[in-house]
Length: 133
Picture 1: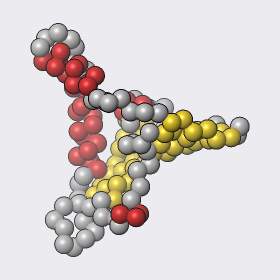
Picture 2: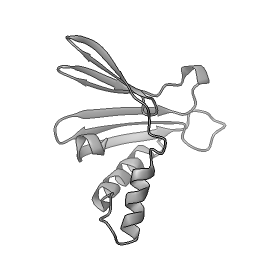
Picture 3: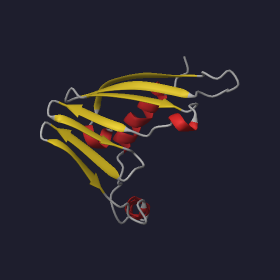
Picture 4: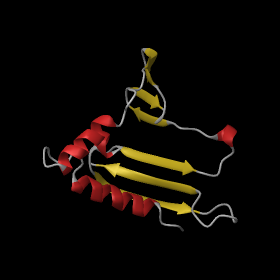
């Protein structure tokens, strides 16, 4: 979300172990407030039945809603004018550009494609969200 919405102002979250047979968290939830007053709310349940599994991201605003699957191949845009689905094909080697940029960085041919500042913020968010309560 940092890529889309910038740096957060605050964030809070937690993880729980719902299944007594597990020793690791099977549910994580968290919220992030971004500088532009956008609020992110996320929930990840790793213990749901296969038929109840969902992969969905929804961005809701004053002009409508954008819905997509993180691992899917379509984006649905809903506005007062109606609904439009945009379908796309993933590139065959979707990670190749990032891998190439990373290799170039380590070979001293290009700047770091991922700033340490963003990485530290993301690590802090993950640490906050993964605290078992």
